[in-house]
Structure formats: C-alpha cells, structure tokens
Length: 124
Image (tube, rainbow, N blue to C red):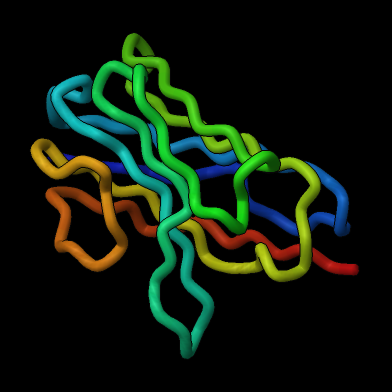
C-alpha cells in the first residue's frame, strides 16, 4: 500500500520552530520528487517547497525562503521541512506529495501520491 504520512505539526509561538516529516512507503521513494504544500480553509493550496529525487535541487516559495529548509533522506524514505522563525501566517494544514515526472512540483497539479496532512498553528 502506498502511503505518505506527515508528522511534526503542532502549536507553536511566533518565532518558534517545527520540523515536519513526510514518511513514504509502498513505492520506490528515490524515483520521486517530493513537494510540501499548505492550505488554509477557504483558500487555495499554496506550494511551499519541493526537492528533487536525489535531493540535489530545491525550490522555495518566496514567503518561506530563508526560513524553511527542505531535505530528504532516501535511505529512510523521508522528506523533512525545517521551519524556523514561524509566523502566524504560516498557520495551515501542511501536505506532502510525490511526483515521478513533474519538476518543479506545483500546487495545482494532481500528483501521484498525497499525504493526509498535518496541522501547523502559529500563535502570536
């Protein structure tokens, strides 16, 4: 069974940090680019960051550049999103997605696999 499972979300004060994890199973992980997205109820999905199959290329949304860092450990089949200097506007449900062919990963495409999401809430 193919699975992407996000974890690491929670409640944090502004200026704090969280590290999200996206753990994969059921498919050949290093054949897939991985992206992180977020969504607030009533708003569209926003691309946050993505990382290529080997981890050699990364992309960031302008709103998170310099604060968030994406990385992957193909041996552990896991992608991480280190989020520092969090702001209330970072509050959202964060999802990861896997795509075998599309690079960079955009938020509007139907990617191969999606996780269920993890809630991040930043309070001031």
